[in-house]
Length: 210
Image (tube, rainbow, N blue to C red):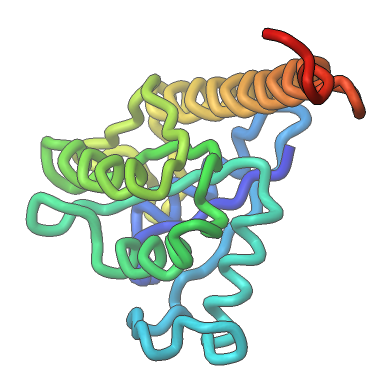
């Protein structure tokens, strides 16, 4: 299972970037987490949102999202919401509305903050955006890392064992969620194929009574 992760902070000493690195370390067997850096994504410009006009970094982001089995997003909380960096990436990836790589994509959210709220508002804000993109966000467990400065060491390694346990549980739940969604899609496809009328048997013969 290939998971694409990205953080909504560009700061070198970001706790959310460190939280993603911890997730790479804690990934369950069979899961690989690749981290995508959003630093090269420019501000959304609808004039550039067309084939052949999109910035290369945007095309790469969309390609990576489309090829991933699931997404893992670490968001900071700014002004009761997510960061502009992360919202901007979602805006790019959400287009076009009927062909977005976010459509139907399993997503897990987590976040770290120096305050007491642990990014609860930022994650709620992201969930609102993912309703529009029809992304399938995992509800539980919630990973809301509060007072992050006490959870990481001076090298930004996640050392708090309860938090490490929560991250591990989130990844296990994401693996299960993604597998169940995949199996459900296959079952639905099989049912649709079985119920489709065979050629020449789609209805009564011309002139037949009803």
